[in-house]
Length: 59
Image (cartoon, rainbow, N blue to C red; front, side, top):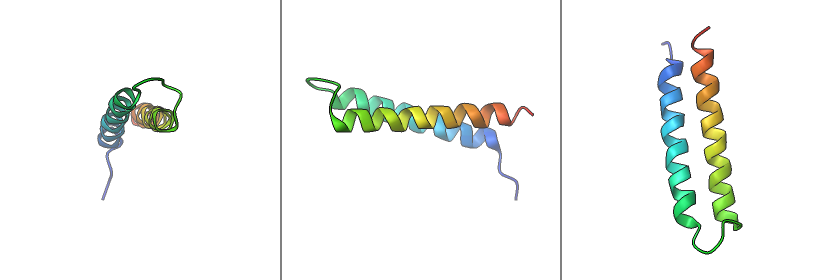
């Protein structure tokens, strides 16, 4: 069973978008709280993984 990297790239991009939205919503008074930074870090990881999978599928 072959796994399509583009499909996983799309999944990670959607998750990154969701974590970005949640990080924006959790920043009420300041962005320097633990939940906002953790959600932003997860979003950055997901976007990085999505880009890596997208460019790896082109090889």
